[in-house]
Length: 348
Image (cartoon, rainbow, N blue to C red; front, side):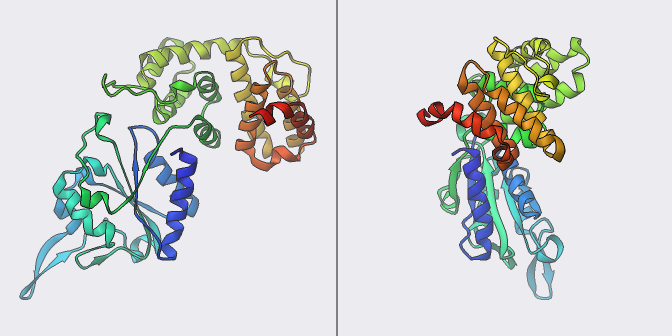
């Protein structure tokens, strides 16, 4: 299931804790596809804490607690890492990451915690959601087969990569527009992991964020940049990204486009993707400047109508809408653009 859909599901599951309908959720997927990131996004959206427990690094007593003598009885000290209303807040997310990497003795200790929301005398607070994530057995990670009793305590979803969802996230999180343009140009490289070859560095949503950081750190050191990008996303993808970035010296004048001047659309497809991504970035920055917003977005919409392949303009405006929302519809130029591509939109 694509990330945008899973975010909605996690949102609803979090809200359901207040209505008594919550079901623990298990996210399956290969490394680097954003499982942990989605849980963090849901927590940030609701302004609640996440308690991230890595079961792969624990022993059964770390969950169950340590026994101690109280008179003639033995009681258990509740681990401080488990959610507590007084210390952590009335609502939040208990996230059991790397659950498929936990040895059977540890996952067995989690059975009661996950289904019954308790462990001995400990009770998970009512308004805390329980989410978990792990790799599949074919992903070349350290994984154990999930026991049937544990699997039956979750609803299960497999995380798929989706370029549109990643692009929306990338614009919202300030990812370098050159990375976005490159992946629009080479969408199959958003995630390219072959467990049979057990690569060290490979393209994934997570490693493209690393590449973004690399561009910021090594962009002014051309002798180091290609090696850095290869270290982030793998040898082949790193070379391609480096070559793509170098071609952007031939980009048209973005300031002139935003100002409404007549600027020719580049003939090269890779440069068209780069221009589209850069213009969305300009629109995002213009949204906070009320006087400039209408003019900037209007001129970008006019330019979107000039692409020889109208699908490229549709992609630009679609990304624009994902990035700035309804503001794109408020610009008079939108109606003209929509009319010019009506047959393309209807066909799609």
